[in-house]
Image (cartoon, rainbow, N blue to C red; front, side, top):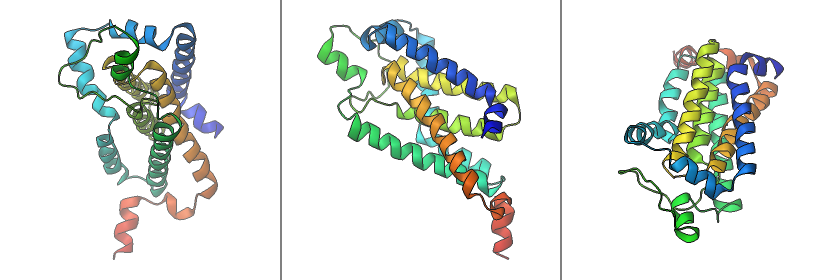
Length: 220
């Protein structure tokens, strides 16, 4: 596990810095004031940029990653599916059971403030089940997993930046509060680490075989 942290420090350390800075901001400002400050930092080109970037946190991103894993060892597919299942299960529990009464910005501001949010045209706004951010959880889960697969430290950091920008897009678009994306980043990265830890003790020899070769060989 220690080796995993060392090999992926260019993703994990920036992630820890983001959580630390994010926590300080959340302790320094109310979620209303913090969201207003972020909401006021808008422009037409940012509207377009974040409107499309946010899709990297949707479920569509799962499919191309699965295609990549077709040429990898079976253990990586298992790790990915375990991370995907655990992150989505925890999201379901947090969003719809524990924090079911946490409204999203549009609903929250309609009930608690006269401030008129800057909204991006063409974005379908959600009103309920705000905490934590599902798109952020997905982005950090997927891109941290890809960072683990990568041998390039530069690529690992780029993957972190993509995950972070995807998370920020949720606040920019007023689909989530800042606290939602901080929690989502922890949940996404944490489920991969937990899945890796579980798989480390359960790993079998056949898991180290190439997935494509193993399947085709069995069918012969």
